[in-house]
Image (tube, rainbow, N blue to C red; front, side, top):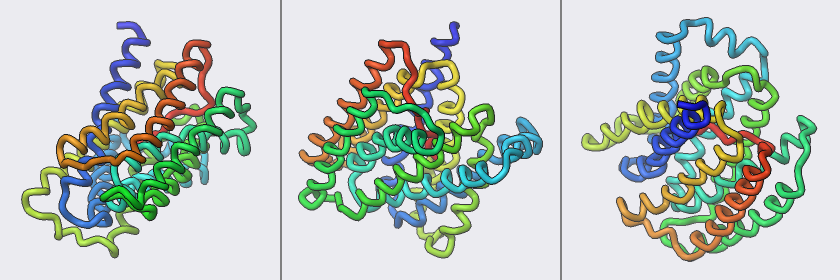
Length: 296
């Protein structure tokens, strides 16, 4: 198997495992804070224990050796993982994943400001068009059942937090950030605990809780940390758009959540613009300005 095929396979599997993330939030019949607490606790615990058994304590010492930037990254991983759940609990899945698709653009802007990375004309045009789609999504939230401006704003906050984490990860490119996810998630669980009702989960939903935080998120994080090492960033970004397209469809089929016409129109603008932009970058054989986010 060539490195390129290996990268495609691993990254695609990572996308498949992240795909049910938002649906799991819908299937667990309790409040968003409680779902976020269990997701953070299980993801942090399983990831941390797995790394300790596989690599030993040294892996954490090596990751945190650069100092404060890694701790900020750890915090962003815990915050973003929690905000995703809270956003989905407050608006439609379609709105969240379509808004979240804009993360690479904010990351590119932060990388320009803090790392001095150049923004190409292609990326500048993309940055100008994508906000139009997001504005349409937000406009339609008042008319779509299950959608709300509050949830959309949380999703936009999530994009900002994700982007900060990505910028830090780029500044520490030789260092694997995966071990930093464990303490970040456990820290988020500690913060969420006073606001959650951990035992309010219905008996029949514990299987979804376990699969969500202890299996799907852990595997997707690991696979999406490994796969992109073998692929151009533009190709990875195109693969990650699979979630943005199919997560709302999965929710529509499984729980009957209609994304609404405005989300579909705005989402089509966001996804279509990003797809064309990354396809152009891939054709030119260049890497896009930022790496895709690792979802915590």
